[in-house]
Image (cartoon, rainbow, N blue to C red):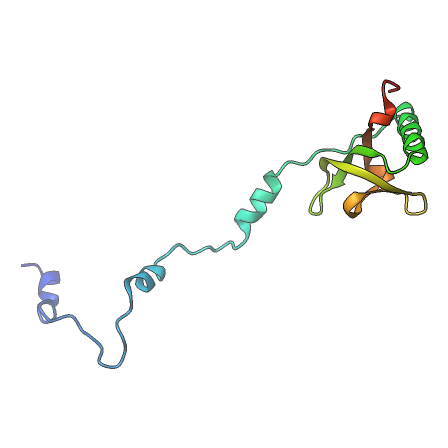
Length: 141
């Protein structure tokens, strides 16, 4: 027997200690104290956010802006027309955003607030509109 083994001879065969004052810890709680430590809290979320892709806002040329203006004038003359609007939604956390499409009845063209208001209260700023579709346009565009 080595010196290291002899050093523990006095305790090696003792029974396991059971506290008389403290309850036995459940295995799930014992395992939790050995779980991985997240030293960089939020680091994984930051990496995920950085990796999330956004679209760049497409700037319309003068011709495309004129076409949108004509479409808006046609919609303005109609009584609550059905319309489908594709528009840019800026991202709240980083540069860029995404394109979305809203469909519904056009309730109002708010000249003062510079936005289109669709049924259900969907408000779309003029500057974010990319395209509009309606049966009213027919084969004009």
